[in-house]
Length: 200
Image 1 (tube, rainbow, N blue to C red):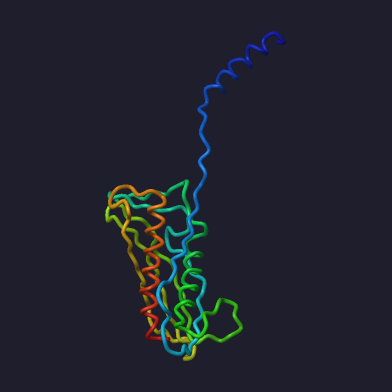
Image 2: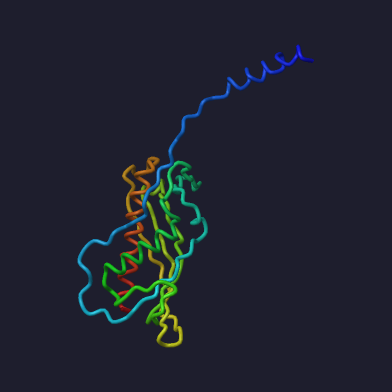
């Protein structure tokens, strides 16, 4: 048995030598941080708004960048992702956007001891690059509640935005997809700001 051991080990070593060497591919992370441009709204802001934690809609749990091919199939980039979960990043972007707009006297966070005038809650339902359309799209579904009158529903809103892909209808790179999706979310937040202005 001692004489046979080297013969058994040699084939195993030979088999290991044929395994392909795969280069390490670093995962790229992109911030989902659209910034509001332009001057804040004029006039005194009187009401306070509580922004609840945004939920992740179907398919929005993953941090990987999503591209929809022309045939409708979904592609998740395993080497490119958002720096934070989309719902979490979108909530922070919306909070910062509304603060910069000066639409409300204060934007409150969950757990605040202040009693809000209005409450905004909802989820992010879409964030993807649509190759067939040559554009990225973002969508938020939200409800606005008046807390001064016994939690009365003021309205249900769908804020959506779109931005062109630099690659057109060709398969976008991770950088092109991320840039377009950030711009699309910015358009959705601008649309939401316009909708909220009448309640401020």
